[in-house]
Image (cartoon, rainbow, N blue to C red; front, side, top):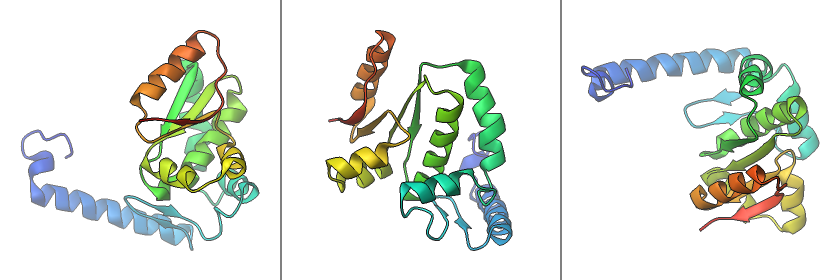
Length: 173
């Protein structure tokens, strides 16, 4: 449907039916994990982003409908690939909790892999924090790239390739 082939994405009836199907699935997930909310841009659980302890608990508990996927399929694929650097892009604020959940799982499985995070929602989060708050929010990531990240990400990967161990918040252009 999304490929644009023979109608596909550009066919409003097919696209509308696909969206309706996904919205129905989101409703079923929400019902099973109430009071959680999942939609195209958000994943929300009450009180789950209050502090790092709560984020860790929420990321690793059975109340996360993606937990089994994160701890098996996703983790196993990344372990098999064995990258030196792994990056997560957080486009929407509703993706923050899941990004932290994935990061916590990956850091436990691959502690030597450099884990970085970036994206618009991450930039919104870190732009509001002072240095101490940013250091606390950075856990479990090694680095976070704020603003435009293409050049800083390339520099980060090259640094890791040379044996560097970059840490902290990196401000892009």
